[in-house]
Image (cartoon, rainbow, N blue to C red; front, side, top):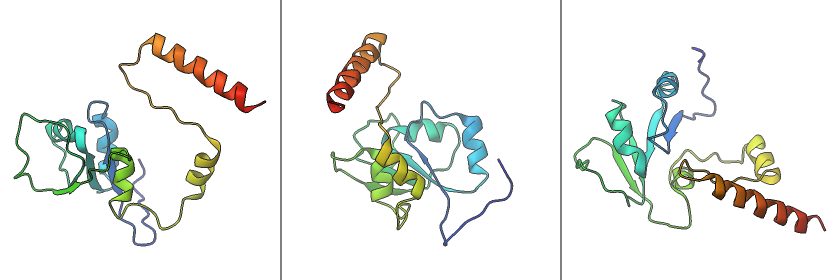
Length: 143
């Protein structure tokens, strides 16, 4: 990571950690060099704290249960119960991290890309079925 950090338009850098289990400590340590505001989404809190990372904001619907009690942990807690958004979407909708205007590359990707949720528990059979459904939808869409 470069030591030249550029902040534009009074924007503070933020590191949003959505999945604590998949969190690579090597990568996170590089990103922490930017001294970002660390936002941890609901289910990632315990893992991130166990890595020794100071959390600034804990955001989500708080539907996870934890062995420890984090009520006294010094962080800002933002409760976002809306089940129509993912916790990652809530990280932008419920904070100041959402840019005033859509970023050009994000707009282009949103207008031209397909996204699919993935999870380590998906089996080869699940992936095969997803592929078949996608192929059928694309076939029907191109008629």
